[in-house]
Every structure is written in structure tokens, then in C-alpha cells.
Length: 550
Image 1 (tube, one colour):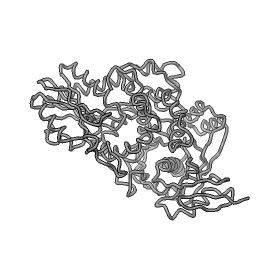
Image 2 (image 1 turned 90 degrees about the horizontal axis):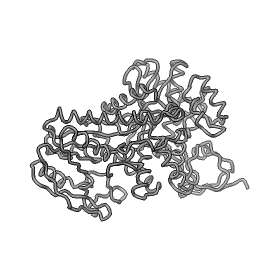
Image 3 (image 1 turned 120 degrees about the vertical axis):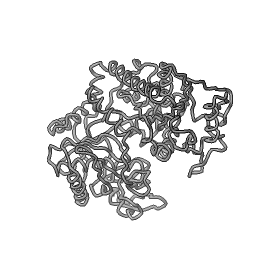
Image 4 (image 1 turned 30 degrees about the vertical axis):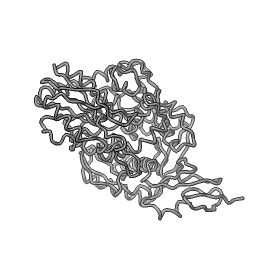
């Protein structure tokens, strides 16, 4: 029998055995705002070239779905690489550095004018209109290495040395081959939604719709503090000749990784000490330090370390966590799904929080709550009184929201934003996502400290991310200080802790695709032992063995 049954939503259709997803997708494109770019077959992501040979369930996806959005973005990067070479010649190289205001900051090795960037955008649209195929090619790992060496891409050639498979999958666009660690669209036609923003002679932002943008691409807003923090971090990495995973793996292979760990930790401590020094020297009226940032940026450890720095200047810091001011569990606001939403600002009793801080600033002895997360309620066991040299250090994901302590004068507050911005790229075309870095940290910590399975963490991560987009990132550039909590070496360490958890996700799980994606991401990193990591390291907050209570 040549007929098989495909279930798409509530519909069951008969198709010829061997039908590919692209043929089938044409019948459903009108149901989507954007081009269909990927599909799930029995829950597993498949490219549209996939051929169907047995009864199955198919779900088509456009870029509004998380996995399909990643595929779309990788297709856009490939389109940008190809278009720059077509327009400016084979010597033009781009480096995809990091995310910036819902886009990607890209640097070029040849200077561009604003007019050049306009022409690049037109060239990219021309290639999209040409509907050029992006085809999958399987080659030996050695052939791939030889190809990348021949075209002058030594980093990708080096990556081939850390892949254990005898064969690798490349993607071909016209006469260009690339290795992009991802599934891909089947043609350039699906890549029509993008904008380019000029920053300077050697840098621009590739902007695109994300899953958080309901109305498409939003106007660009330059995030000066975060951009400069990235630049400082990358400049430091260049000094150490550590720009990509090949450079890091070389440190592991030649046994200099322990030295790198000590250097990294020393630099982190020095930068935090400098912030403490500025707080003391420049802000004599400041009595409150607000420390904010998204999940898994190491707020607790960083705050503890800042306490020690301030004590070295004769100050007496007092730590508070905004989590202890959560409303009672039954009062927690509900999200759109009807479930408690702990990421919203309304999950914190702001009135109690501000009145408590006001009393402390007035020198009153004040009862301070501790939130019992098991019972879902506040308990009052501690009393605090502030003296002349005391400084309040308050950490929380909402700490930088202007509604927090809005009645306390600005001159009495110092604000610090924490972010885990890794300085490393995988190679010139593939960055290390700060979101993935934080997710790996959280998987390890949740499993170690809360007994959560990896599926529990992955299930909650989407809501955490949505809350960050709404409640944290809009205020990240308002902070007086930004501090990078990522360690340049940490992905090799996290790999040793998280890989067994990733492999535990069964193929039947709805999180299997995400587990496989993270496994593939980590496979190019050599493992790094945690033995040499000091007990006061921010990374210890996640892997354990730290000296601070977290």
C-alpha cells in the first residue's frame, strides 16, 4: 500500500508514502502569519526535506515557535554570510558576536558605510526573492576540515577536531558550505523578515522577529551599558587569546586551564572590588544597593562577595532578598494560563517591602520576614537595626524596576545589573547564547538543591524567560553599574554536570528536542574539572561546594 495517514491538528489526511514535508506544508501555509520553516513529526523536529514513510502526527511551525525561531535565525546568519561575500567579495568576513536588543551584533573585517549596509539589506532581499535552495550535505569530518582550511576558516577547521563523528552535516547555499550546529530552512524564501541597523564602521545589528514580539520587529533601542559590557569582556578575552571554543579547548589540552580559572576568578573579584570602592568613595549618601538581573546570574553569591568587599572599607553591609517579601501563596497573581505567576512584580508585597526599608533607614529596629517556600508564607524570626556605617544590599530579579522603593530619593540608592555574558564564541558564525548559559546553570542548580528533574526545569524555563522579557530586560540599561558574572571557562565545567541530566530525557518527552539541542551544543567543549574552582566562585552557586549560603 502506498497510502499513509497523516494527522495534522484535528485533521487526518491520506498522502503517498514518501511525500516530503515541504509538499505537505504548501497546503497549510495560509494558516500561518510567517512562512512554515520546520515541523514536528511525532514530536521530533524535522526539516521540511524530511520524507514520510509511515503513519504519523505532523505539526507545522513558523518562526513564532521557539525551535523554529532558532532555525530561522541560523538561516538568517547564513544568508548574511553569503550576501556579504556576494556584495563585497570573498575576503569579507563577519563575526556574529552577541545578542543586542532582540537582534544580533555582527562585526565585519572590512569597514562599511551606512550606504554599504543599505546595499547589503537589498542584496539579502534579492537572495530571498531568488528562493535559493539550502541543501544538506553529509561529508567526512576530514573533508569538512580540509574545506574550511581551504577557505581560510581555521576556527571551523579546528572545531572538526573536537567532533567524534566520522561524518558531519554541512549546508550548501549556492557555492558556499557551512557548519551551523542547527537544522536549517530549505531555501532562502523563508528568510524575508529582517532589518539591519548600522552602529559603526565595523559593526551592525541584524534584527528579526522573536517569539516575544507579537507585532513583528520592534524599533531598535541601543543598550549602551550592555553593549559596552560585552565589548569590555571580549577585549579582555582577546588579550588572553580566548575568542572561541577552540581556544578554550587548547587550554584544556595543554594543561593551562587551572591557570585560566585563577586568572578569571582574580579579574572577577577585582572588578567587584572596584564597584565597592566606587560605592564607598562616590556615594557617601547611598544607604541602599539594589542588585538585579535575570535568573541564574549568580545574584546571591555576587551579593555575598560584595558584602565582603564593602566590609574591607569599614562598612557594615546587611543583605536582604526581595524573595522574602513575596505575597502569601494564595495571593500570588495568576498568569494568562491561570496558574500562579511568580515572575511578576505583583508577586512581591511592595508596600510591606518599602515600609520595612523606610523603617530601617530611620534607624528603627524592624522585623524582617523570611519567606517559607514550603509553606508559601512569610515568617518573622529576625529583627534588624541599621547603624551609621550600615548599607543595605538588596538582591532580586525586580530590584531595578522603578516602582521598587520609588519613594526613596535616587541619591540614596545604587543600582547594579548582573548578566552572564560569556566572552566566547563557538566560532565566527555561532555565538554562545547567554540564555543557554543561564539555562545550563539553572538545570544543574535545580537538580542539586531542589531535587528537580531536568524536565521540571525546562518546563518552567519558558515562563521564567517570558517574565524576564517583561519585567527585567526593559530596565537593564538604567543601572549605574553592570557586572558580568559569566566565567570564560564555565561551559566546560557545566558540561560535566549537565550532560548526564540531558541524556536522561526520554524520546517521548516534550522536552526531548531541547535536550538534544543542548547536547549538540556542548559536544564541542572539552570537559573541565571543577576541582580548581575556588569556593567563593560565582559558579559554585550552581555546581555546589561554595562557601556562601544560597
